[in-house]
Amino acid sequence: MIIAGEASGDIHGAHLVKAIRDLNRELDFFGIGGNALRQAGVRVRVDNSQMAVVGISEVFLKLKILLNALRVAREDLRRIRPALLIVIDFPDFNLLVATAAKKLGIPVMYYISPQVWAWRIGRVKKIKKVVNHMVVIFPFEVAFYKKWHVPVTFVWHPLVDSMTPRRSREKKENLKGDSLLIGLLPGSRNDEIKRLLPTMVQVADILSEQLPGIRFVIPVASSVDRTLIETIVEGGASRLLILSDRLRDVLDEATLVITASGTVTLEATIAGTPMIIVYKLSPLSYWLGERLVRVKHIGLANLVAGRSIVPELIQHEASAEKIARQALQMLRDEKGLAEIRHQLGRVAQGLGTPGASKRAAEVAIRLLSGH
Image (cartoon, rainbow, N blue to C red; front, side):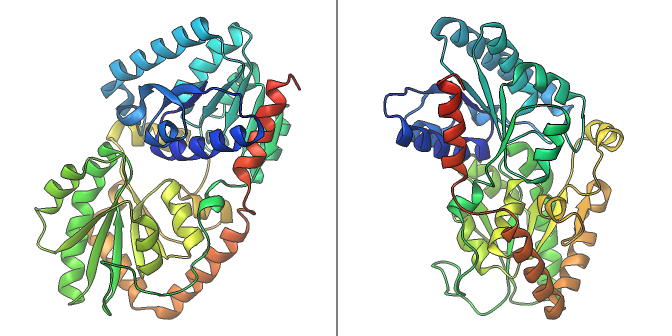
């Protein structure tokens, strides 16, 4: 049984399933996920498209959906009794399912650690009780789990398997042009988009006045309602190109991206694309987060580097005026952009070598054989 509650976990889970099947063709998979897991041959019992949430207060808005998914997962554990449960990130939900599995004697592999080292550290006690093995993707996570005596294996980051550093400036279809290209990346969840994209559209309008001819593009993730994007963009004065599933092309061609926090910031890091990280939560989630978060940065590129490489504008700082001012400052400083690209390249090297899915699959096979 495999559970991926979000779009990024769905993709990483699909790669993991394929890698496990390369080692054992006899295995059958079912669980919670999206199109990527379906295409990998997983029987998806609950689609994850409506499950993803950001922040604490947002959970209440989707409580009915999450409770129904939890009920199905628990029933499936009791009825099917899988040989192994693999859960991917999505901690609040997955730790409840892992607890149910533990009671039934089903081993649990946790792939891609929740950021317990950043906030709500108390969850590591729960992990220690219900998870048989943590499979982590950042080197600093190993020492954290060893300190808590949790079995852990470091496999490097799975994004390295699917992305390579920027190799050329060859123009991509729909992105041709000699003027500046700016990518707007408002996230992979509809709630994020409602919160961030209207501000990004305002930023585009401000920058268009300051830099005539500048172009903007929004690569739409498959998990996102495209009509939602189109409706929000219609309210702006600037012309924004909307492309489906073209994130890598945009990262390769853009001079700068304005992006939501999340996995996409690591994809931009690997591509070597300078970025401004912006984020907004509900007032309650932000208030709670301020009191619980134990790290200085929210952007994964900055977290991995241990210092600020790219700017982060969070909550009240993430106004259209402040984001546009920061973008103009960066776009007018070619030397500064070159230094950011250099620093991002160093971070990308620290994410390791390809093969994360294969290494994680080997852990799964060991757990299946009782080791």
